[in-house]
Image 1 (cartoon, rainbow, N blue to C red):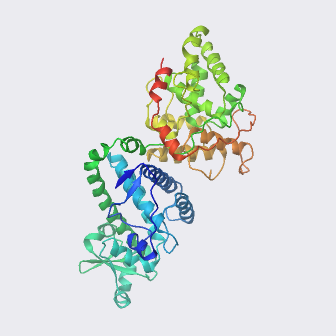
Image 2 (cartoon, helix red, strand yellow):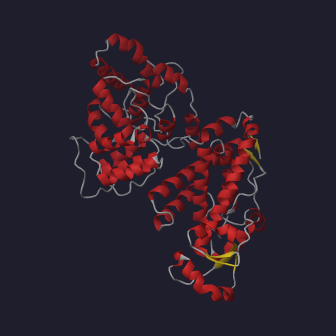
Image 3 (cartoon, rainbow, N blue to C red):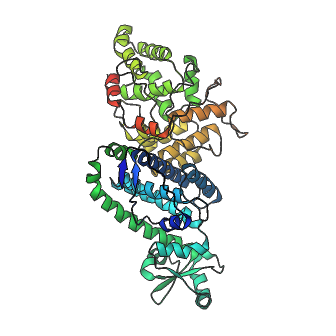
Amino acid sequence: MEFSKGKRKKLKLGGDQGNACYPHSLQFYLQPPTENISLMEFENLAIDRVKLLKAVEHLGVSYVKGSEQYQSKLEAEIRKVKFSFRENLENEYEARRRDHISHFILRLAYCQSEDLRRWFIQQEMDLLRFRFNILPKDKIQDFLKDSHLQFEAISDEEKSLRQKDIIVSSPSLGGTVPELVYKIPFADALDLFRGRKVYLEGGFAYVPLKDIVAIILNEFRTKLSKALALTARSLPAVQCDERLQPLLKHLSHSYTGQDYSAQGNVGKISLDQIDSLSTKSFPPCMRQLHKALRENHHLRHGGRMQYGLFLKGIGLTLEQALQFWKQEFIRGKMDPDKFDKGYSYNIRHSFGKEGKRTDYTPFSCMKIILNNPPGQGDYHGCPFRHSDPELLKQKLQTYKISPTAINQILDLVKGTHYQVACQKYFEMTHNVDDCGFSLNHPNQFFIESQKILNGGKDIKKESIQPETPQPKPGVQKTKDASSALASLNSSLEVDMEGLEDYFSD
C-alpha cells in the first residue's frame, strides 16, 4: 500500500467487479490491500477502526454477547463508521473496502506488544462472530470456501442417518433437529471435543451450524495471530516512514473523541459549587484529587495537571482557577508571593496565556490510565487502574455503593476494564440501569451527570440519598471537537512535555 498527500480519487466498480473484490460482508483478511490511498484517508480509517473495536469491547462487557441488545447496539456502532456488516445491502463495495483497509492498518499499530496483539485479536474475533451470526444461511458455504475452510455441509440423507447421535452429542441443540450439519476433520474440532460437545465418527466431527462459529473463530484467531507476528517482524521497515511512525506509535492508546474544551462552559461554575459537585458529578479520579487538595492544601504536579485541566474543562475561568488554587495553597501556609511567582504562571500557561500559547485540553481516560502512573504521595491517575483492590473497595464503600455493585466493579477491574468499571460506578451513583454512553473522558462523566441531575434523563424512583445538599447548576454540553483527527493529533503528546515542566515543583 502506498500513500500520497492528495485526496484519493474514489474508485467506482460495477456490481460484479465489486463483488469479486469483496464477495462477503465478513472475511478472514487473507490478502492485504494493494491500492494507493492518501495519508488523510489512512488516518481517518485507522481512527474509525479504533472507535469500532473499542465499542466492541465495551458492548462485550456490558451486554451478553449475541443478545438482542448487544446485536442492535453493535450494528448501530458499525453504521456510524460506515463499515460492512450485512449481506445483500446496496453500495456495499465502499463499506467493505473501508473495513478491509482499516483492519490491515491496525495490524501495524497493534502488533507491537503481546498485550496489544491479544486485545486486537479478541475484538476482531467478536466482530467476526457478530457478522457471521447475521450471515444468511445460503451464503455460509460460499464464505467458508472463500476463507479456505474445507467445511462441507452434509446431505439431508447423511444427516438423517446420524441425526439421533448428533442431537445427543450437541448440547447447543437442546434436543432440536439441526438445520445444517458440517463434516469437519477431527483435528479442527478439538475444542468441541474437549468439552464433549460434538459427535465423532470415522475421524470426522459432525458439527451443527450453531457450533460451527466456534471452529471458525479458532481458525481466524490462529491465522490472525500468525499474521501479527509476521507484521511485527516487518514493522521496522514501516516505521522508517516518518509520516506513519507517530500515528502508529500512539494509535493503540489514543483518544479520538471530543476534546472537552471549556469554550461552551466558561463561567458556568462558581467556586462555591465545587465541593458539592465533587461528591455528585465528579468521576472518582477527580473526586479523590479534590479531597486530597482540601485535606492537604497541596497537590504535586501530576495531580495539579490532571485536576486543573479538568476544572478548566467544566467551566472555570482563568481568574477563578487562580483564585481557587491560591486560596487552597495559602491555607497550607504557602506564602502568597511564592504562589504568585511560581504557581500562577503555571496556571496561566495551561490556559494558553503564557509560553507557547497552547490552549491545553483536559486529559482523557486513556491518557490518565496509560501515562504518568502515580507514585508515593501522589493522588492523580485512575483509581480503578492504580489503586489496590482492597483500598478501592473501601473507597467505594465510603461512596455508599452497594456490596453487589462493588463486586461487579471489582470484577471489571480484575478484567482490566477500567473505563467500564467507572461507567458502572456512574450508573450506581446516579441510579440508572443503563447510562446509554461509552465512558472515555472524565469531563464526559461530569456532563452526563449534570444532564441527569438537571432532568436531562429519566431517573428511577428510588434515588440514592445525597451525601451533602447540592444545588443543581445548569451546565451546557461542551462543543464537539472539529474532527476526530484533530482530537487524535492533540492526543499525540503535543507540547505536553513543556506543560509538565511548568507544573513541576
